[in-house]
Image (cartoon, rainbow, N blue to C red):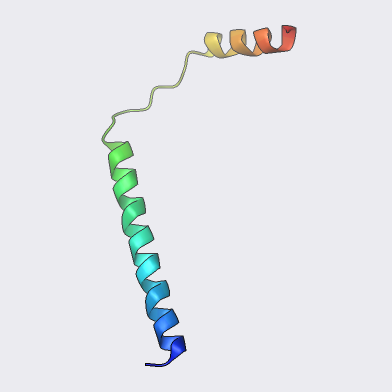
Length: 53
């Protein structure tokens, strides 16, 4: 097996491993439930306290 074929196989294996890892991470994050945004009032108070310091 020449070097270019070996590089192609290794690169393909890395790509498949990364894609499977990405799908697993997405599934784990999706199982946490619905993402609820922070209340807007709290975000504005935090921004105001940073600006006033």
